[in-house]
View 1 (cartoon, helix red, strand yellow):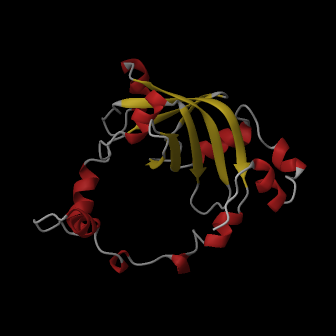
View 2 (view 1 turned 180 degrees about the vertical axis):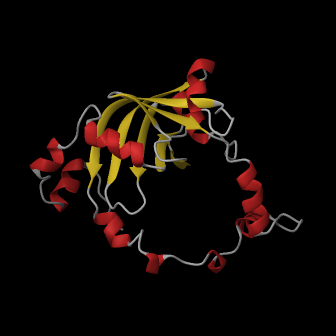
Length: 203
């Protein structure tokens, strides 16, 4: 199987980058980017581990759950998850981070790249109090690059179209899939039980 070994080979396969695609990359958040983040309830973060492998992880909350501290800084609260801490551990080894903000129904996305640190100051965490709970930590991102991404991938996928939604029952429950993967002997919780449990521990 033929593979690409150099940037020159890669660039020869594609037409030149359009000037607008180059110019749209900014080193700080402008008013449109800040507005986008204020309306976004969901983001995907990407980090690199000590083993050289990449990690991606979803993050979500009420619209604007990510706080724009200023034009060069975003703060992302870390709410309860599976406690693997993959991305947090990665940040300690390699602070580089990428984020993609999404808004349901909007085909464009916002991409942000920067350097991350993990903040645990009580006074800072207090800004993120939600339903009487505080995050254990906050990921603070020092922005280096930010740009709005075109809609083609979302349009091709039909991500937000009602006709593309599937019933959850078309997949096994998460509990069943994990049981099959790891060989657990006990019966997995039902989808309804899992959703009730998760609803109690979102924050």
